[in-house]
Length: 82
Image 1 (tube, rainbow, N blue to C red):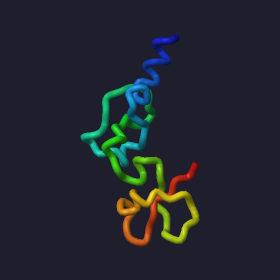
Image 2 (tube, one colour):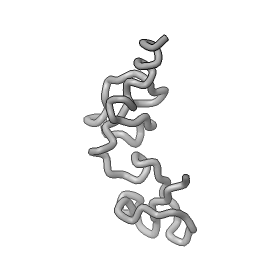
Image 3 (cartoon, rainbow, N blue to C red):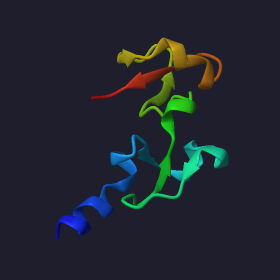
Image 4 (cartoon, rainbow, N blue to C red):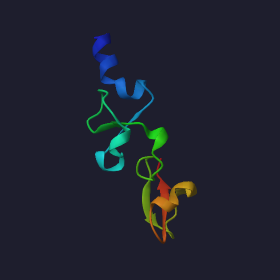
């Protein structure tokens, strides 16, 4: 049971994160188990979606990640919903 648990969380235990394939550049995808999506080295991926954010219109009220806004496009900001 312990072996099963450790393999199921291999991605997160290695310091990576599980994200949809569309938000992780191919060179940052890691071959680790534990994700229903892909295991990604998020430390090197600096996009709103990869960091758990969502690109929203600039007037949207939300907790912002201004350092990631440039990855969203014009008149958009990166909103983090917790």
